[in-house]
Image (cartoon, rainbow, N blue to C red):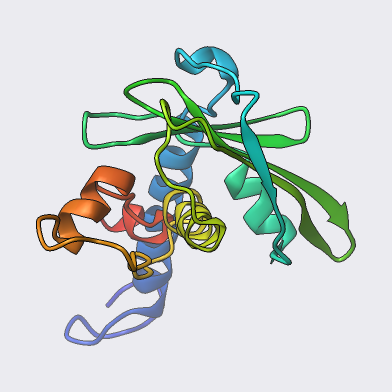
Length: 187
């Protein structure tokens, strides 16, 4: 019998609770060890003078906003983005070139945090996409997948020619993705 008075062949609730506490502590320890991205974490270039302003009515909870502020520092070549938060703006840079592709300002409007401004590069020497609609879908994917760890579908591109597969397009734009934070505690 365990200290809770349960026979050996039965599951003890105190052991189950202890297992979940250890699992939570491992998860919290991993989250604390992750470095929060700052501008100095990577070599970057500013958003070019040639850019467009987009609008979106996205909102995030306080918890999501806190998670997003950690940003993303690439760990391997398949990580295509470097993302950090500074002075009220999220900066989305291509990891290989350091080019700034998106800037997103998010402001607190209780009880949520809402997108106030979105800027996207239109310098064809740095970023070839020109569809505002697709840029919004891609940006939302980057936020949800890379910063929030949600398992969502990659936005399909309407104008892919037969030479480029959608999987190759996804890998080119988003890389390997990110392991959702909730699944990190399992390993």
